[in-house]
Image (cartoon, rainbow, N blue to C red):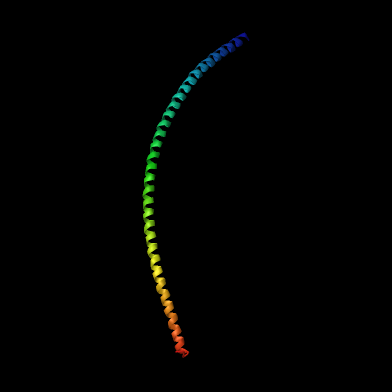
Length: 124
């Protein structure tokens, strides 16, 4: 029985040694993971700063282009509006002139019809 207990104690000592080795291995691995984490975090921060700078530059260029397009469109719209206003004004003058002519024609028609009626009823 003592031989079996001695053998078990030997196995337990080996297991304890193996567990100690695992603990030291985990401690080294933990240190490596922490180091890797800090290096990766620093790289990510660097990339973030570079990308922010690039995005800011692109944003400024796009805003400048948009402002240029906006100014050109405003100029074109203003020119089109002025041409349209001029055409509407010319159309208004033409309509006024045609209205006077139409009024004269209606008066002439009325006078002619009155004369025709007067002749038909032998008033003249």
